[in-house]
Structures are given as structure tokens and as C-alpha cells.
Image (cartoon, rainbow, N blue to C red; front, side, top):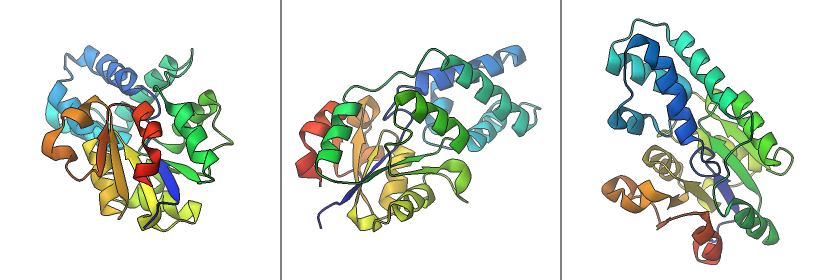
Amino acid sequence: MNRTAVLFDMDGLMVDTEPLARAAWERVLEPHGALMTDDLYGRMLGRRTNESAQLVLDALALALPREELVALKTALFLDSLADGVPVMPGLYVLLDEVERRGLPWAVATSTPRAVAEIILGKLGLAGRTGALACGDEVAHGKPAPDIFLLAATRLGAAPAACLALEDSANGCAAAVAAGMRVAAVGAAAMAGGALFAPAFRRYPSLVEVAADLDALL
């Protein structure tokens, strides 16, 4: 089956915001004498903010309301975007290639809608994407398929006709569970072994995805 729509994860795939998100979590934890480990942050990748906050609370045994943790992290993260959003190499070239082929595309992100809209606005993509599906709009976050299925529905595309682009293992699992072809992108995907085994192909960056797009569709 030819793929007739493309779904993009956002953080870590379209924009290099994962270091900013980690820094925000670390600043939240610092007053409590708690440290963000690589293992803990790795388990948070691709998940919704409230789920990540619960992972933090459980792992570090913090006596804080989850809502307070989410609000603090979100505020610090948005502050870090004041001077702009770091764009992943190849993003705009890939979008041009997708649109040149007449394919609709959507963003399927675990990020809350209010935050995702700010990021897309800073990228100049607010009116360009065909649809947006966010973590706070579904019952279950990644690795469940809900976000990708919602994005496909909003595009009017069958899940099996969608190519999903993801940078996290949780995201790849979600797209595969939705019945989509998945391309895994980034350093973690290239070195991820079995965690990224469900991906159809793996690429170092979106630059290579753009160059190989015909083979993916």
C-alpha cells in the first residue's frame, strides 16, 4: 500500500527540545535535592507531561502534588523557548518534499496542545500543518496508539496509509500499534537495538528521510 499521509512527532523529531525539557525537570528537582538520571529521563521520552511527572514522583519518592510538578516544569520549559525553538536539521526540506508530493501531514505529539501550538507558531507552521493531535486530547498517551489514531482521523487518512516519523521507542511502539509504517529518526534510533525493532527503517536525521522519502511511501 502506498502511504498517502505523513505524521510527525514533534519534540525530539521536529525540534531539538528534549535537552530543554530535561533542563526544566532538573531545575524543578534541584530545590528538593533530587537528581534526574539518564535512565529515568529515558523512560520519560515520548510520554505525556503528567505521566512523566508521575514517573518522577514514583522514582524519586517526592512528596509533591503531580499538578504542581507539571505546572512548574511547563513554565520553566516555556521560558526556555523565549528566544526561539531549535529546529532539527532537514525539517523544512522534508516538509517541502512532502507537500510537493501533495501529501497531507499532521503533528502527533504527547505535548499538551497549548504548548504544541506555541512551538508550531514559533516554527512558522501553525497554519501549514493539516492537523494537530496532542497528549491532552486522548485517553492514553504513547506507547498507546491513541495520539496517532486521532491525528489520522483529523487528516481523514486511514492508519495503514500513514507514514509516522518518530524519535522515541515509546512513539515507535504507538505508531506501530496504530497500524502505521514507522521511520525512526535520530541518534537513539540508530543505536537503539531491539527498542526500535518495529521501525520500518531508521535514519540519523530528517535530512536522510527527505532524501529517501520515495522509498518510505
